[in-house]
Amino acid sequence: MGLIKMRPVPVFLIWILLLVTQETCGISKVRGADPQKLHLYENKEGFFHCLNSSQKVPYSSLNDDFCDCDDGTDEPGTAACDGSTFYCENIGYVPVNILSSQVNDGICDCCDGSDEWLGYVDCPNRCVQNGKERIEQMLAEVKIIKQGLKKREELKSLSSLRFSELVNKTKLLQVSIHEAEVLERKAKKELHWLEHVLRVIEARDIVANASVGNLSSHSSGDVVTTNEESSNDLGRTHSLQNEDDELNVNSEKTSDEVYKSTMRSDFVLETCQNISKVYTSSHMLLRLQKLFFDFLSKFPVLSNFFKGSQRKIDTEVLKLCISNLKEHLETLRSELEKNRTELERVQQYFSSDYGPENVFLALRDICLEVDSQGYHYKLCLLSHVTQDSINLGKFSQWDSNYTKMIFSDGTPCWNGPARSTVVNLLCGVNETILKVSEPSKCQYHFWMTTCAVCSVHEMKKLRDEANIILSNLNLTKGQKSNMAHKHDEL
Image 1 (cartoon, rainbow, N blue to C red):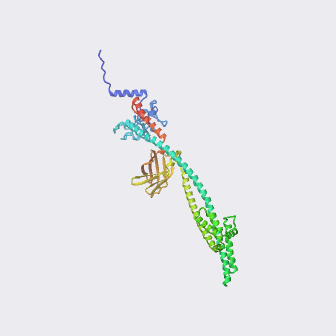
Image 2 (spheres, rainbow, N blue to C red):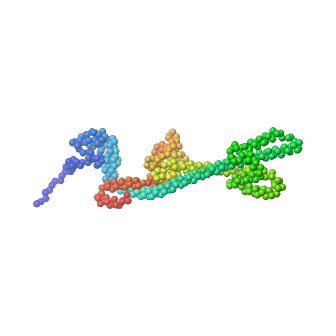
Image 3 (tube, rainbow, N blue to C red):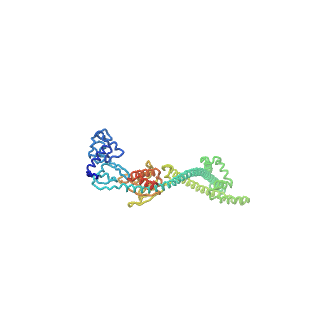
């Protein structure tokens, strides 16, 4: 029995059969619709129900290049409705939604070319190649993130150490300032006391000289000093003696006591030596002088001969003590001011936000420099930015994710706003400026890498993207498995 020969079925009949089968089985695809929403595009008694309203239109109106639904959902595969989207399946890469206005515009927006279905341009399917290239790119990114995460741990340790150092430095400065303030008060009190002693001694000498002058005038027949003049000298002396009470320098010793004490030959030596023993250059001189006059005291004749000289030396030594004490007081004040300024500078560190786990503290004040488009830029992290000598802003705040440093209040532009800068931070092993731009007048953008923003979350995002690409590759189950195993580091 011979084989029965059948005539070939015309191609157009095959297409009709396929269309009928799809309609009957309810599996027809709607061009440009997201597969997860295909059930919303079912034919319901000859009508399509618009997705975001209560409207319904004839089912034949789907993708007829005319916008029937107010929400545009009846035209997912054409450019008829503003604001609607077209779904690119992109088998082998990542599915995406593009604006419907990009459909059949002569540009291949979907890597599978499905957006140019009218055929105005030839769009070869490049999704598999894109997927493979993206996988390789992600492998490189994952490697950088892993290195960055390791470096970030080191940065956290440095930040923690620096924070401890700042706390300790603050405590030491506060102690030093307190001790210096105590020494300053003591030195001021001693200075007032020495100056008062000097005035009392000088007043004593004035009275002594006046008495000698009066005796000399009587014996030589010169003009005799009147009682009024003597009273003025004594009144001035008494006034000087009472200054101690006014200064309230030493409540234990009144001016009268000081005056009586100064009559002792060794008073100035003891006073100056006790007060200025530690910090004046006159200490050795005082010791030598005391030894000299102790020696003279054994010979009354010589001692009387040098008595006038001793008073003069007392005054000069006291002046030297006062001068040295003033220098010491000035040194104390200078050191005190220096420590106060340093404390204020250190305390400024505690008023800034250094992000999660204070990781950016170790980067504060690190400055990066780069030449771009004929300008020299300098970026000091968490501080300021300059373009040559122009201020592009001072650090003012972070964005919510600590991935952008915002600098403001820079040098005002001519006929424009004050300059400002946004520094975009990307994960990287080292701190490096990648790019500088000025997208609008006097507003600058930097892109820089730093390990401070590397995160496990970023790693997870890459892995999720890789899983989408791998699951969307048009491969057999075995090929998918091999591909996944090959890139298991993702």
